[in-house]
Image (cartoon, rainbow, N blue to C red):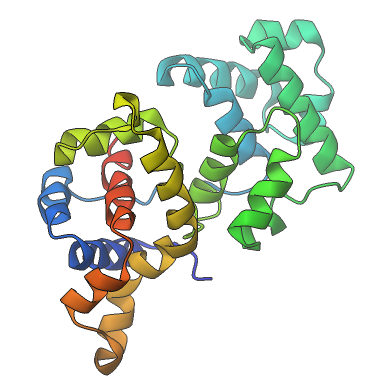
Amino acid sequence: MRIIRTHEDIEAGLAGLVMLDARLEHVIDKAGPVPLRRTDPGYRGLANIIVSQMVSKASAAAIWNRMEASLGEITADAVLALDDEDCRRFGLSRAKADTLRRVAAAATAGEIDLDAICNAEAVKAIHELTAIKGIGRWTAEVYLLFCAGHPDVFPAGDVALQNAIGHALGARTATDGKRGRFARGRLVAMAQCRRAAFLGLLCAGDAPRCASRDALKKKADPLLPFLCGFTILSQRA
């Protein structure tokens, strides 16, 4: 498994996507440079994702800033020491406070290693993360994507991403009653997205092994470039 670590990794992946679906070339040009939005793995990274769920960016930032002002470094031990009044003062809902505590308890007890899990296969990592009550698939996928740079995960159920690709390509999305299309696409992306994203590196490093563009299109699931195209716009959100 090759982790996404550098801007070069992103550029190579984008080049591979264009080879699979020429429509994405226009989307890439319009989006402009894609930033490398990586965050350090561990409790702090997952806690930030939990805090950001279901609220605006401004609200999430305000809550996080209050937590940092009070706690300094946001660690599992620091969160376990909070009482209910502290959490209310920060602006955390009861559900988010409980999830933060459950993750903190699991981490301190050694029931889950949030650093080591970044090196696990996607299915296994998501299974372990979602075993903690309050951690859903979207949270697990976003953690692996942004904190681990994992190439084989994609939050295909994110409505904002579905709408973004629908706008970019003039395609109908799950919000238009096409949920089955995206449910299937999520499974495809889990298994194949790494291959597509690093196709450019393969071709650049070993030209004889690189199949023709037509051959690549025949082998690739048609939903793969459609879903991976979300990445281009999500990085600009």
